[in-house]
Image 1 (cartoon, rainbow, N blue to C red):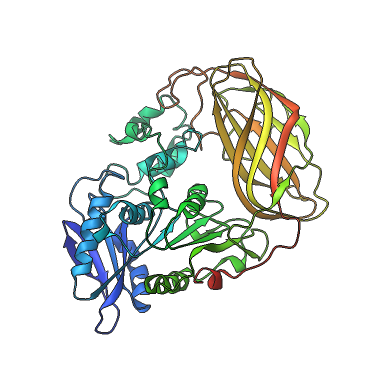
Image 2 (cartoon, rainbow, N blue to C red):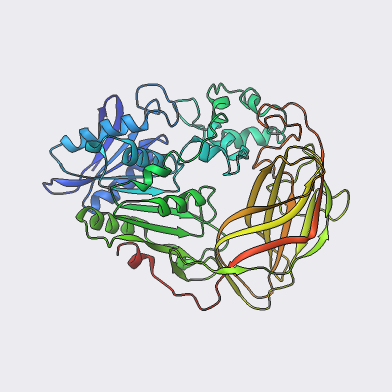
Length: 493
């Protein structure tokens, strides 16, 4: 059937009902990405016995009001949940679901709404938790290209121009380079009044403590190649509800529709069936208590129980070049290429391992410990880990960054977290570790002047020294054959 469209507090809302008389449990998706794009999803939920509801958030597409990202979702979600539960086709049970910004909407309803409006279960996929989490790394370093792309598409407008940044970059490849970053909207030819405010949000963890006090089951879904992967896992760890399930695969932000290079046929679970099966059990109170889940081992058909972690393993590293290098924001290390120039003044320190003598399964958090010196008082230290196959193909495994303010010329020892890995590395793989001062345009350039990278108008080069004898790569290596699991059995337990 064609969904029924209604207005709830001025918010355009589509409703798809299952066949039969009902009443039914309901699924609510609130999105800035056009509720009409969810019609196939609504039909899928309805076929599985759920009343399904998709709503344009305030100020987007057909909904009334002013669009202010992250500002109104708790109140508007609560009003919609109360309306939904009053409908004759609703049995009162509600699942809040969504991916990316819609995942934020689901969590805002679950964690911040009054008790009478909160859902009975939550599905949060690749959740964009809040402004600070999306705009900055945990160290505070600014995520430039991803935020520029998002704000150029739905930011400060009723509709979306999904390819706006891509088209602008095709016409002007150096669009993100001019300073200040705060003036990007003018270079895009767009009015984005909220753009400067994005960078004023520095406090992460809005949902952190609230998640510990959550009162309903959670299904958190993420991808190893998604820039919100760490937030997804942290949400699962912190969740205080009666049960929490984690599903992580070798996917990007689009999940199974965006498989990574290490994905295979075993990494394409039927998410619709899995979500519905989990939701039925969650609403019936039939999930086992506690935290469980399944994590795919990329490069292998195996799925592992969530929480599986290897023991620290430090492969030997030898310096290849650039133990002394210049981090020049006018000529930064680029995030979009893995090619390392063989000549010229080094812009990064490069270290490599010997070929792996046997396959290596790495599952859990990785990090780099180093002793290094910067010639400027402000310095970002990026660590990029790359796998190089015996055939010479390079693939990025992880990127981490810390922002330091050490006295110029004084050596400091510190750790750069690389995030969580879940990957089988074949025999013969060499690991390449790059230490750099920039990772542009994925991240804004540190100007090395002490000024805010968003408002800075002047750039300085920074001399760097890395002590190769004090660089240690720590990988979470499994020492024995991993215990496999099946996500379609593990998630609904």
